[in-house]
Image 1 (spheres, rainbow, N blue to C red):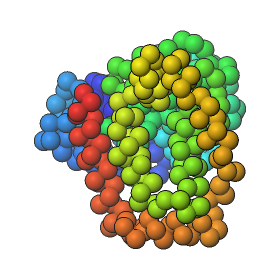
Image 2: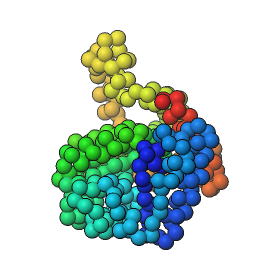
Image 3: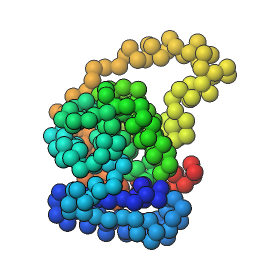
Length: 293
């Protein structure tokens, strides 16, 4: 849907028969709903975008003429490696091969391809139609031209790409996210605050700022004379608080059971309640995306 919104022809392939055609039906439904809500991205109408979309049960047919390939299979290393081994046999030397992985290292994913110079990670954030960030992470052999092409493509289709200068476990987004999760988990585990209240710390506190500015700019703006002034005022306090953090949580055992029980008290984990809450999330993100635009 993101690539369609940029006016590109998009061909979908899945090795499970019928899966790609089922995706087409779901995309059609969502694109038409977005047009009705006046939230359709790009300059083309729903019908114009959908006319550029096709599904294929044959990999070589799907890859014919492709200049950019985005792999979106499940988060399993051998599956992704197999995809790229197969794909490489059907595309030209200049076709950029990109993985959607959220935490697997590019040096591992592309370890079996013959030409890793055009391979990279393009990690979107779920749901990418409303959350625009894409992390671009190079394989150690990736050419700068491949990174630049992916960067420009993502900008062209309305995403907000960021470039990592080298691969690192978890990339940037998940490293930051896991740091936040770990401290939130410790505070709940140590009975400092409830699950509901720690989520409010983010949604009604930090998240309000972070929807528009990041932590470095937050520091820069939170002291009269900018970042240097901020560090002079808060450096010692930051060090003291950070030194009090506990060990990395195990995320299991009694603490996990208690935290799970607490979150399920106000969001039960059955499919009906989770689906309704995800729908609420997507609607709110759609409205926030509209506001930011």
